[in-house]
Image (cartoon, rainbow, N blue to C red; front, side):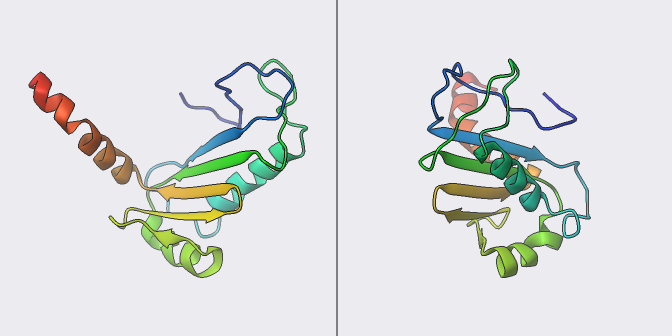
Length: 137
């Protein structure tokens, strides 16, 4: 699914209580090289901050409630990580993943990961290799 603006998709029905966990994805156009000036981490943090104000609504118009215990998992998927890597490490205290195809940071109850499209494909292939081998695919 692709969306032109930010929307919230919820796994469980919104019953008015605070959510325990919220996951947000920010997908950037492949081969984009302006991430240092159009910082996607700042964009996704702004959206998280907006959700924390308890004013963002779901598709039915109901408020998405959070509290101080709500955990946030934020994922940015982009291609131009090499040009953006130093800024993430120097100014945002991100650490590099072992395969050097992503960066991550954990602070309080917020986990942020910046991944390349290649990392997503490589990890999916590794994760599903045994299944595909057994199926002969």
